Image (cartoon, rainbow, N blue to C red; front, top):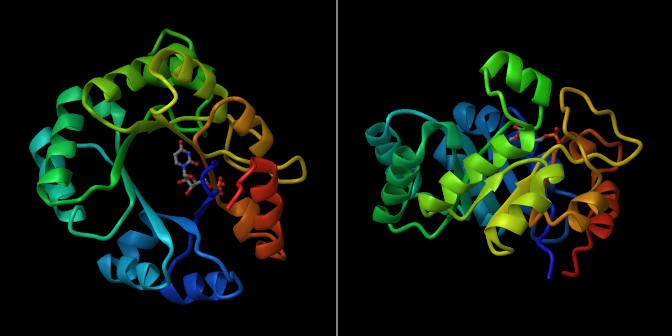
Length: 232
Ligand SMILES: O=c1ccn([C@@H]2O[C@H](COP(=O)(O)O)[C@@H](O)[C@H]2O)c(=O)[nH]1
């Protein structure tokens, strides 16, 4: 069974969130990112969970291992189903993050951001001085994340196949940058349709503006859900 598309709630406050969620008559999987969490804090997580939606808390932690471990211990007290760190922090940092999360009693999936979907291969090589292909960079981060015991990675749908081939089907490939043919690409670079993401082995898709900025978000969600192939 395919997972539900994850809707990125990139809003400023709970009023905007409740206005957006009100027309949906089903439990959703939503993503709370920096914009929403840093302005509203843990109370917002409780409010969304009270509506029975699942939550991916996308804060992309990246710091020294002890700091990330203690921060994750704090996040582990929240009722969330998925959260993340940045793989560039390295294996020791990712292991520390996992230790902190589990020490708090959380069973949330922990995944690692590899290369942002707004980054091109040319930009990665020029700005980060990483002189390998995008696929190799992401595979390296994914292997490190798996060694650290994490559940999966964030990448684009274009890299999902090589990650599955090397690291197995159960390792999560959570893929933002999802657009239908009609949607504006905006600041994303490595974009893909929901159909392509499914065919190329993504385990989850993350969809923000294509749904939240649509004139009819519920109808657009249903279109994307069908294209992605969600059965539930
Ligand atoms: O590599 C990454 C990691 C995270 N994101 C987040 O996903 C959504 C995408 O929003 P769209 O409006 O569908 O572009 C957004 O919250 C990002 O912070 C990502 O895009 N790429």
